[in-house]
Image 1 (tube, rainbow, N blue to C red):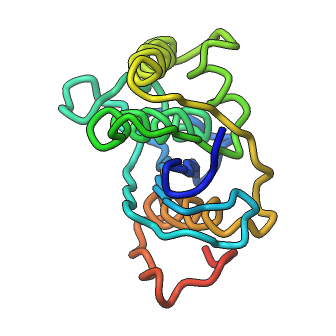
Image 2: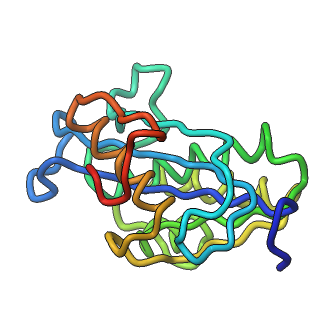
Length: 180
């Protein structure tokens, strides 16, 4: 897989306030950072072309609901991955896509390597989207280690953490890696 501007890198992260207390009332959120020109080494090469964040929605009546039964770190990670895949369908333009996440669970569920034991609708939607994107783009999932100073993963973490905490995001020009 070639690197450079012909490759889109998407960084996804999830955050849950108290992952021991999962449930529909729990606050969990996801963050997505889309980068072009990234080397993948975590030094912050490349340019962010898109950022997005949101809460995990567990209300089946909501237009924003994508299948999460409960709010947890895992459903936040999968929700973020679904939003990354949706972005690729609309904006990917047939480019090679590398989705990086610190969640092996989300990457393996979405790619179909693992089967979900819970939140099966959310998992099925992520797999369907992965397959759909794979017909238009070469797509690859890569696991990266959390909280190790990887600039774009840290930015996705910042978006997710701040959203679940109900706090404003620090603008990129003022934000430093590791700053939650």
